[in-house]
Length: 521
Image (cartoon, rainbow, N blue to C red; front, side, top):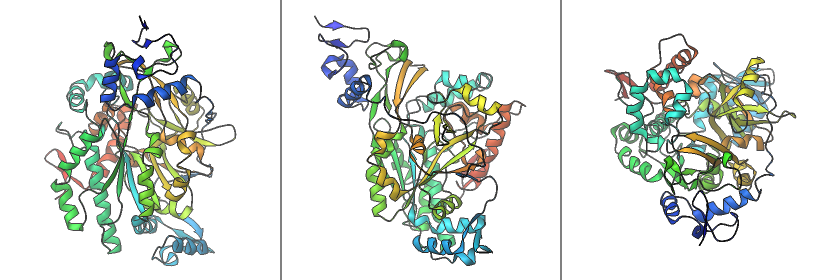
């Protein structure tokens, strides 16, 4: 008789190391494989994990947070300007193949040239043919509509908004987050999806390119995305609907370009593993929702994009793209930014990351930290830096910059590092306590690439312009229909709502009609 253990592994006289599929309950294997998990790869990962092969990855130990005076931080709040030697500007413009005269665009100050915001915007738009816009779009909204997670954000607000939460949660569950409503209209109806609005925003920027340069917009700003095997089919179905939607097709036809031009690569799933409370060795979690022999398939973190999207990165480079944005689909503030593109291209840096000032709503994600030597990286709240440590930084009067999930990379230098990045990014094993049970998730986080770079750059930005995120459904509700009270959460929600409205009327091309935000004619 094979020996049976608590989580239904069938062990044939040996340890939990070097497991094979035949050692597992067939029902568990069948379910996870049907949901996109490669069980051989998953079991090989568990062997490496239990053997300690990931224990030697060096990651930064957060000891402080950087001051705004740090030389790597560029303050983008309000209008900005960029200064550089005029001769360097001429050389850089030539290198970037910009058909613009830097001396005519900027203001001379001695041997320097100073570009104001309008000049930077023009430079950035002229760089659109060399830039691509990417979204990390593999999320399945498992945490997004989770009752425990949303309640913990703000119990009082959750109780007040429970009715609308339940309606929207039913619509979101089981769907990729990218194609769920990005906002709620004042009349209570759901708005356009995150993905649809991103596609419209790209078209709006193509139109801006045609207006400013007088050139055709068909080949500028190609898009790319990383989906997952769990979400890709639904996203591709959404594309079939979106491509003929008048809100995209009408504008695309007027510009002479496609409604949708996007490259896609698909991330495979991993299985949830046992909670740390169950000790070692780690095993595959198999009691989801209290049901025996039932696992959870989930992505291995967006940090896998550097492996999954590598073919697209190389294809874009061959096409002439030199700069790529990478960002999260659920951030409404993540839009094409010509001013940021211009500053980054002129700086010659390897990558730039956007950071906003943390608010009480920013409880899930990463913050900018430094170690004892002053090296900077992004540290996720919970897995890397505790909430108590973060609050202690704030109590000392230090501004905590919250990661916006937006990175802009020099594509050539990124491609040079692609072979090594998957083995250098820290592996995070995070305990979860959700409706499905107590389990752990193994993932790599995109933004921890900051700690691998020698000379990164950071934009300190306003949250209501660049970081209108929706890590949880309650955030979407609060941002869309902010409270009128005097609590800190109400104040933050109203501020972010103002930014959302500004984005609607600007980058996303929406107008307000009869209680709803709809696409302009």
